[in-house]
Image 1 (cartoon, rainbow, N blue to C red):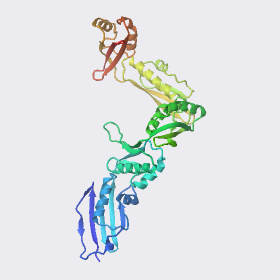
Image 2: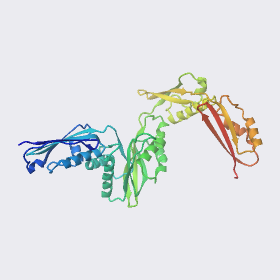
Image 3: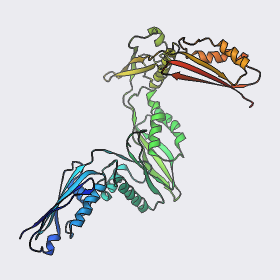
Image 4: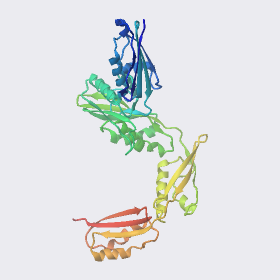
Length: 432
């Protein structure tokens, strides 16, 4: 008996006309039983995952409408940039070929405040419900919503009155760089924080810093930021320059309908403790080397204090500001000697353009006092600006102000086009 072969293509969600060659005799009912599905073209997904996402099942009775719906379903997820299919009827049953092409751009999915599951467990459960989800998502399509729906179902199964939602964060005017899922409803708060892998002295300082996070809303992204901002410096100032913290691991300590208390654990990997071997300045500098080294408070042979060194870089930049180099940048480049657990720094200084004095404007005072203050200002227009002069001027001219107490608000504006510095000083009476 002849068979019927039908080729259909779905490109970016649009079905092209089918090419049909029909047999001259009617086919038995068994011909419409789906007996095989072959998937080609995907390097991201297995055949079983694509078939599961299509909604088709072996043994079901099929027609071209089912294939159209399955192809549309796959295309709408956003996981594929095109989908094509071909199918063949025979007395033994129907064979289907699915040809797909993966969407190239995917971004990570992150779970911010769902303490009921570990990441590994959550990924397993979500993949079981959404076969095309493997921890990342396409920028467009229904797949992010399918994950949201599956998360909501998991939350409901926990008998938790919470609502799942997600955000698409990304840099300003740039494509999104993640999908961040979170829940709202019950208050999820940090109860206590502990650290593994920390020595006794470091753990004490970590606990002191972490105390301010207790009773705050539980958020993995917020905790990660706090770890980088407040916890990591505990190690950086002790010479543990490659220390790192794991992602926060939550454990539900208590739970009611209204509130969930979460204990959070960080694993600390201190790494080696590095001592400072040397600090040198590279390039040609307008200041003598000794003057620059006097600003560096890092003792040679002692544990490298990364926090203090970066404070010293700010002091170097301020020194350059006294010569008008308002955008100077001092950057220490570290070279590690792992065998001896030492670090050497070479400080690169980018001076930038030299700025000159622009306009001086004094506001809030009578014309006579304003004129006296302007006359007392010693940097004339066109002269190199000195960033250290303004606070000295304010201290020296206090006696020239009218009676009463004043709020003094200075403001410095850099004119990049003209490479000048405009200074505005506003005086407001404190008793106003």
